[in-house]
Length: 196
Image 1 (cartoon, rainbow, N blue to C red):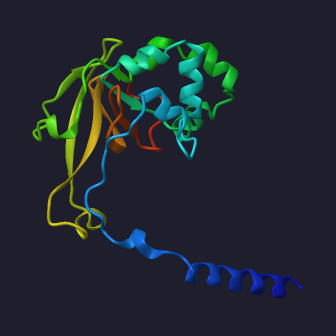
Image 2: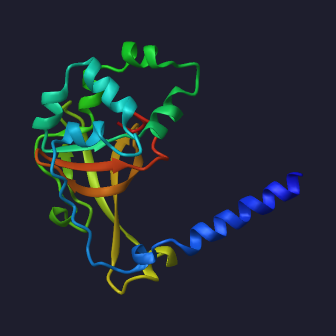
């Protein structure tokens, strides 16, 4: 019976795939980085709900207007919070111990776009909490990046010196431009507040 059900399911999957529209495989050109909403609304309405924990903390600290007033926000996904919480933390303890100033480590006064950064890596920028970071563009030479383009591909890294050791945190989605500022989404491998 199990084999029969598995066979039926596999037939359905094949039938669905055959009826799929493969238009997404066609290169439609450069993606438009503009989002017609505020930074807060972009995070709160994300279709995959990647930023629910971040939005919960923004709401807890009444920082919606501050987030929308920031020129740049390095946003953190739920995966980053999960890594941070793995040692007996709960959502209630996050509300208790993650302060508004901790969130301000990720906020910057001015818009920071990748095209405005120097490729030599000398991009020292101070967060709203007063911490200094180096925004570094790192050229990607791996085949996963280079097989689709002849142009150089850069990934944004947010670096900070801690006890004379440089801690690098990578961005997975860059240059999202809302109506109120710029959003760079930290990579899912980033541990919230590590190196910040």
